Image 1 (tube, rainbow, N blue to C red):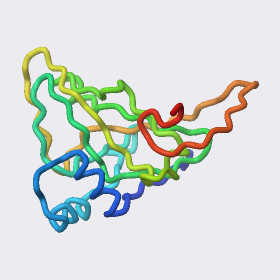
Image 2: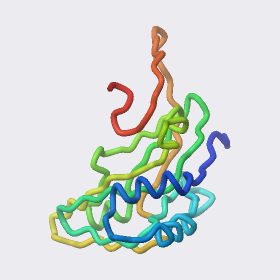
Image 3: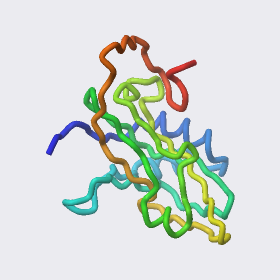
Length: 171
């Protein structure tokens, strides 16, 4: 098995910035620091699992038709020629039609060095046609990440440098 990546937590300062950008709960820095301290790195559930489960750092309820951006507190160092693809955990997708806003999250190897420390945020939506609410408790998996190798064309001449996420490569 190829060992090509390493998950890490982002700094507290980066998590605080992104958390406050997403949530306006009036929490103190100390309360948010406790959330950051409790963040668990993604893991596989079984030896045969392809996906690494990302754990939510907070409780949240997502009503049908609602969306939410979750700052995971996680970054990932990935070897060249590999990408981390993010999907909803299959049970949540099946039961609630939970999906990523951009269908599949793509975490490139050079995202790690961005000004935001390569902080992986995930924007999900509950597209349930049955009007089901999704309840995710702090510490439960909600997204899974799978590492995949990729190739490039023989005439590729890409030489840009990334700095940021969500559409940062073509700004």
